[in-house]
Length: 414
Ligand code: KG4
Ligand code: ZN
Image 1 (cartoon, protein in one colour):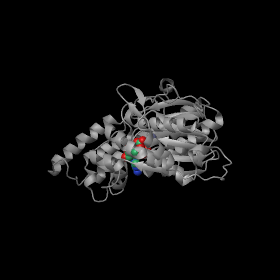
Image 2 (cartoon, helix red, strand yellow; image 1 turned 180 degrees about the horizontal axis):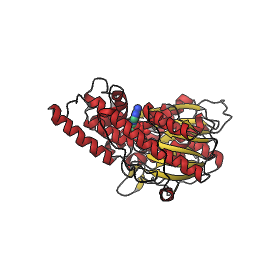
Image 3 (spheres, protein in one colour; image 1 turned 120 degrees about the horizontal axis):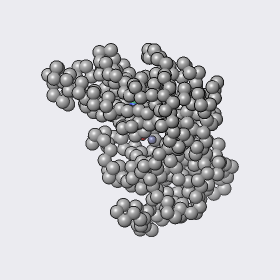
Image 4 (cartoon, rainbow, N blue to C red; image 1 turned 60 degrees about the vertical axis):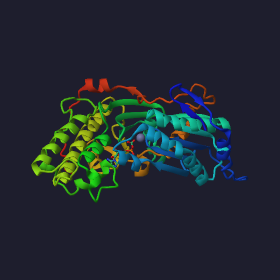
């Protein structure tokens, strides 16, 4: 196994014994014939160690994932060195489990695809080092993967979706709107100027101490907000959606979060409780926050659809909007988006929940897409580095803003 020496920025190899132990642990299946090309995908860009084997036709032969959510929930956020250590402890087992489940030996793989950008440097480094070792041992082509591109193309594994289509990625770390024109052809229409909606919902949930709520203690912040919102009345609070005057497709959530923080503080005073106790109005706040976030996301997406249709970038009659990322599992936000797609004659598609969040399948599938298109397949990995920051595609968000499209008001009756 290779370990990244962060300060020196070079790779060095630990004991060969560990490598042989790893290789010796595979059960080979002599005589089994695979008709299709097979790609192993490895994902470690944030807090999930994940791997999967997917064949050329999109069959998932095996997958495994180790989630660090529980650990990070306790520390109130991701601590990069902790995430790195957990990736190191789990990557070998996870890759082995994915290969064993698929009954594929490393020598039978057509390529190894791994997330190398964007993400947490320390996390990306573990996946890349491990993958390069496998590539070197088994003399396989290497396919570097852009994490966002992988999220965006996942829908093509489960649905027959042709290019071009619009994608909205909303999670704890991502928030962007992009037009997908090909396997590696993206136009970025807008992104969050500060934090992602999942990050904001996590922060609000933490401020409301929802982890102490008996019904929410094991839920992520966003899920806890969605759960509690069902019991609340959103009309008890009036939060304004952000950036109402900016006629572009960018997002912002930190200003709104600040307003909510102040409101919570005021409510704590009114109810005479300390920070850390649960407000009696927590469910109402959750409902109002969720509604405001949904309206903000819906409005920017509505403008992106209109822009693409105006410019002939999307088919007027068969436009598709794909929504993915952890926040896409929120049914209230989905309904808000459904109102938009109904009003604009678009089809709304979401990958199944387990493919919306980070996973190894999407990385393997992106490897398959690239293999089929003959794009970005490396036979020499010299000089390959991970890139913590990396934009998605060509950024045309300025042009979108200059078009200043006025979005018709829609009744958000959800
Ligand atoms: O895609 P994901 O697993 O990881 C990344 O952030 O990349 O997304 C996790 C985020 C967290 O912020 C979590 O609070 C949010 O997705 N989330 C939700 C829901 N389930 C997870 N947000 C709103 N509603 C949900 N039901
Ligand atoms: Zn992600």
